[in-house]
Length: 322
Image (tube, rainbow, N blue to C red):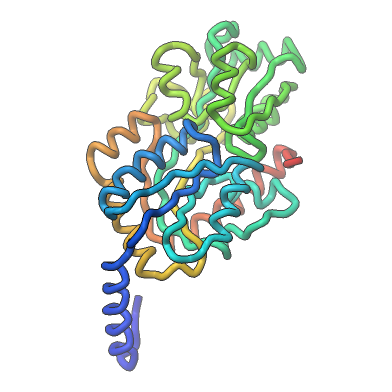
C-alpha cells in the first residue's frame, strides 16, 4: 500500500496502534463455525488447523457445527456475530458462491457481510460407488445409467453443495436420468452409500479417502481439472469423456465484516504459518486436500470471481434450491 508523504505520520501511528491491538488479542476463547455436520471433508481440515491455531493463540477454539440450508444457517450465524475476532466461519464454496444463484434469496451477503482472512484448502470431489454396483469406470456407469433410466440414485450433501452440482453436471453432460437423494451432510451420505442404500456419491475426497483405502467404496474419477496429489491414479472426469468438467471444493476462513484489521492480520499470519508447517501440509495432502493460502484482499477477489463462475454452472444444470 502506498501513502503520500503528508500521511506518513498518521500511518505510523496507525501501525503502532495495530501492533498493540494484535499483541493483546485474543483474551478469551474463539468459536469456529462449520456450516455442515461433523466428519465431512471440510470439517476434517478445519479441526486440524484449529487445533494448531489454538496452540499458537493460547486460547481454546470451539468448533461449532451449524448445519442446514446448504450451509446458509451456519454462515448466517457468523454474518450476524459481533465483529470482534472471536467468531470465525469456515467459508465454503456453496454458501459463499454457489448459493447466491441457487437460492432466490440469502439471509446474508457473502461479499458485504464478511471480512476474508485466507483460503485454507481445496479438494476435488470423487465419484464413488458401492462395490456391489457392476461398474469399474465412468464409461461403465454411464452405460448402466442409460440402461436403467430413473433407477440409479445419487447422494448429495445438501442443495447447492459441490457434491450436488457435481452430480447435476454429470447428469446434464451425460444426458442421464438419475434420482437425487439429498442429505444434511456428507457423513450421512457416506453412511448410506457404505450400506448400499444408494448407487453413487460425488463425495469430498477427504471424506471418502478412508473408505477408498479399505476398499469399502470404489472410486471412479475425481472432479478437478487436474489429477489429485492424494490419488494420482484416479482419472479426472475430463479424462473420462466429460471434456471441460471441473468442480473443485474450496474452504477458507472469514470473520464478520468490521473486524479490526489488526485481528485479521494476526489470524491470517498465524493460519499461513500453520499451513506451511511440513507435517500439517503432509496430513492435509494425505486426506486429499491441497493447502492453499492467499491475502485477505486476494481472497475477497476470489470469492467474487467464484460467484460469477458458479452462477454459470447452476444455470446450466437447472438446479434450484427448494
